[in-house]
Image (tube, rainbow, N blue to C red; front, side, top):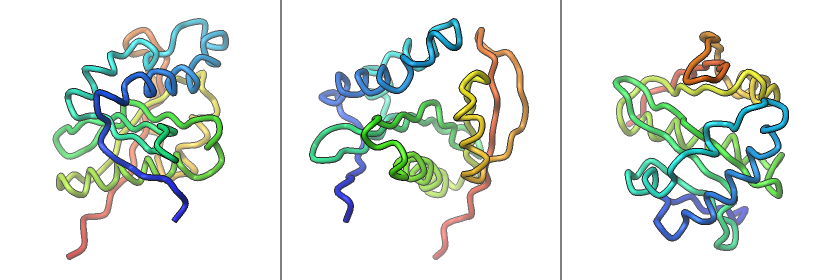
Length: 155
């Protein structure tokens, strides 16, 4: 295969997750004028709650998906990809993992949001089949909300 392995994150992954999130989001601090929400998250608690999945290459964490279940949908709270993996399709594969989580739970959609100032992300999600559902200020951030339908699991 391509050497990427996906797994539920463990407590031992937390330092690597924090480093990955900083690599992914630190560049936005100056542009946004605020600290992006993923930089303030408690990853030990998120991992402890079972909401984090990691992608590893050669044992190193190179991707992160933080998601939570809600009635009828999976919400992607954070997706991060190491700079060394950008452009490799890993982000798409992490979003596909969210689809798999939704199917397994019998949910019909995946929802997510991004900061309006993260223009790369605002353009990225529609190319991955997401439809913009709104823009509003939430928790002190200007956010753009998206959804994507998930086909039910086939027997």
